[in-house]
Length: 176
Image (cartoon, rainbow, N blue to C red):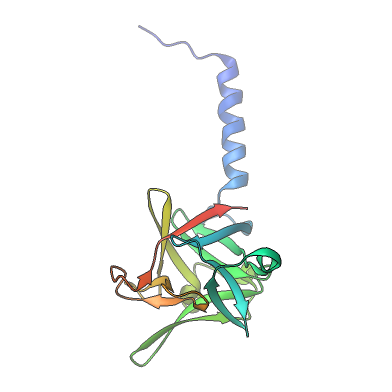
């Protein structure tokens, strides 16, 4: 039996291709990927905000809700992203110094980063979805995950023991 392809199906395929090309980032393309804005909060409902130039997680209520920092995200591979705040002008990075691995904010434009540069690997995070939650593992320091403390108003940091009860590594991550 021979399948007949409707002429309209070619148009639909072409439109789907164009739509996918405009919304997804392809490593081989020359054009930069588009930055998207996401809300993030941990499974205990703590949101991110900036305090004394440090990213912290806490419970924001009333007029303080305007302090919430949304994440600027540039996808670079299907499950890898650059993360930033303040319009992509401050980027989250994983820095290793001796035996210490820490999360820091660096004054770098997120759209200037490249997945092909080794020096930019510290800005890359691997997303792992588990049902409705997402975990963020550092590409530069495998096994280190973005985390919050159980207590409110503590710095957002990294942990290499994601199963520990005193650190939260699962986040709700929603496009704004």
